[in-house]
Amino acid sequence: MQPFRTHTGLVAPLDRANVDTDQIIPKQFLKSIHRSGFGPNLFDEWRYLDRGQPGMENARRPLNPDFVLNQARYKGASILLARRNFGCGSSREHAPWALGEFGFRAIIAPSFADIFLTNCFKNGLLPIVLDEARVDRLFAQVMATPSFSLAIDLGEQTVRARDGEVMRFDVDVFRKECLLNGWDDIQLTLRHKELIAEFEQRRLARFPWLAKTTSL
Image (cartoon, rainbow, N blue to C red; front, side, top):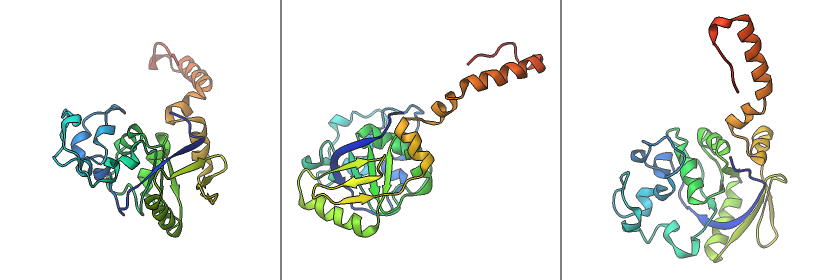
């Protein structure tokens, strides 16, 4: 998993509350268990004017000119500004996969659905909770200022605006450590591979019928 320490990026405003995971990545694209290939179908029903299906050549599909991510001023955005309860609905890791592959490194919103928030941390995407008033101000600034960017420092737990305003955010200590170091669940486990190997060797010596070999 790619570590997240500091990031400065262009902000794209998605001015909708209660954006659910089926809107983030529609269900017809969930057939693959690989973590790649979902970016072109992020917000598929909003980005395109036709109905998307797996295997379609997205470059030939008609774009919705009114959707924010299709607007030239937000091309290359890596920070998504959203409204409350972002990521609600069914649980699917494909949602942060799609957001990450599209190019987003962080999402700022007043609140997130719990499972989506957990999935973000497990997949290298930083969800930042700021209060409604600050999010309102950021929406106003983004829409009024072309190329509006923010600087995020996870270690310091701050978001810095161009005008110098510093906004602090809270983050769970364990999740912060994992994201700073780029540790997903597998990498966390492999940090203890020597202890696991020792345990398996002792177990094999005591119960030799369970396995012929152990390897880590």
